[in-house]
Length: 459
Image (tube, rainbow, N blue to C red):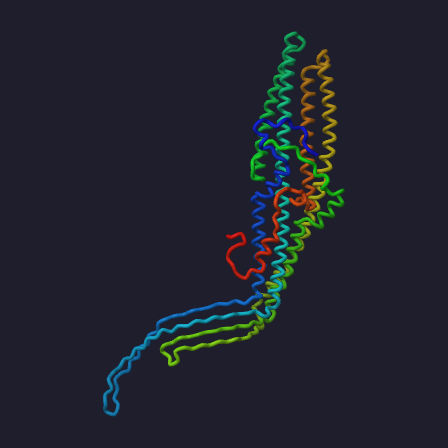
């Protein structure tokens, strides 16, 4: 349902007028909050190649070079009556060498396998968190847009009320001049006009606040917004369907369950420290030493090694217990997420139904208030009603129109809240004309990279 109480677009703002869909598309592409969460997902993607590195060898090379000086002093001695004088010899050498080593893990208690699965669960959880952030950003943008639309409509109504009350004041003054009313009646009309001017100033201030909030959320200024189109066709048929859908596919719940999977796998990763580890080491070395009789030494080796843990001072056992407690915490957090989503779904559906009923009531109230105002004006002309009666009837009509505007705004916002509660408030579901962000692209680019310091976008 659209807000239909807007007047013509003021001059200078028509070029900047935009629809709700355009605002949502802008928020989807330019929101710093959403872009930051996308960067967080890309960072989480890197956990997978880091885990996969446990299957690959590590290779290191070393080079050494030095100067070694050896000085040997022989004291004088007597040999067969012959005196051998004291002697001193100095030997200088330049020992140097190169070496290369490679280590290959063969078995580490299934830690690498479980680390890869943990990283993949973290990636899936991060994607669900991204989808939840997308929903929140789009909902905030829709709400900010509807607030601006509502405040423009209320400002129009209050400005129109000033014109109507000025006309009432003019009529009261004319009737005072011919003696049909007293000075009190004109004073009441004047007070009503001044009060209406104050209400206009307050409406303008509220509009400026809403526009500032819109810029904060969407990242762009907004002119006169267009009426919002209904999204009722996208909503679930009833509350039961909405609850079932929310429990099955809301991203907050799915992210929590991926967190449970990651926590359970982390238990296996820690327990893997209690298993034997088997590895293969290969080394090649070449040494040069001028002081030795052999000027060059070349050596190579391949060694298989198995390490069996016996006792780790209780550290690993404590880590296992800690991981189990964390897994229990994650399961409880998943239950909390389910309850929160259910509450949000029921609340949003109730707000939708309440706003729908309020719109019908406000329309009936406007019609009745308009009829009452017309009758009071006619009765005032023949002296059966006072100016205050007319002003009160005019105020009742104004309040009914403001109520309708607020209810229409609440109806649209509640519809988007229902979409968010069931996990459907996405750019794809809304059919926004904006390029979609595909988290799979970056994941596929980095998953099997063995080398490289630059990110896929060149940083």
